[in-house]
Image (cartoon, rainbow over all chains, first blue to last red):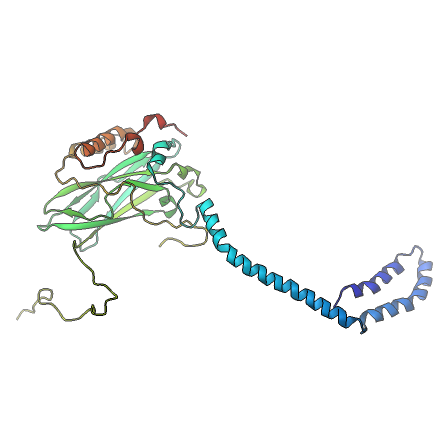
Length: 260
Length: 85
């Protein structure tokens, strides 16, 4: 329905109320009333040219809706590279802003006004028989300054044990700025029986730490290492090999014999 | 676990820059390590005071083949660059 047809009666009502004197209003009211009523009636009655208007309007609305749909589809296609560019510019979503290379370390400046306490924690799973602990509970570091910390591991058993470690940092927002130059994680370390070694961790906190508003009141980071036992030369069966299916048959050396 | 969401930086555990320290099985640099720990204890765990002893430890490691030789500047020991912010 075209809206323009409704303006007709409204316009005539306006002109009729806009006259200056009330007397003139009354007389013009009487004169124009039949005109008004005719216009109102015309506005709401069926007319032959209304069919043409309706099809034109329908076509226009169809075009509007179709263009909206096409624009929406185009937006979904364009969103993928747009999001990637956005991530690269702002480093959200995992692409780290901190450039992990030596030039950055060489050029970074120490931030004197923030002192971060880095605490150290060590864990071993219950089946791992190393004694593993940090040599210092905490260390106070300025962002932009490289720091060294030590852990100690000892093998009290009489067999060489191979360990492999992983680390974790909390809180996660601060962990983004924590960079390790060298440590002892992710590689197999073998300890001979009765041996004790010092395991150093060489790290720094990125100077951009002070510019992060979420970290304005955070001055304490916890670095936690866990040492797992690794079996060297262990070749895990390929899960996609159809011949390699686990069996429940007990091997004689694993299952303890029941005492008679 | 960590939070997830559209605008949260995904932090993943990443490998260290220079890899892993070879284990000091013979305890070649144990003296330097103990010096560093004593320094830390005396200076109340302040890293800034004990950087020279840490540097001695790295020198010991490099001299005995337990660490790849690297310029001091690349390890953060270029003293001319330390300007307070």
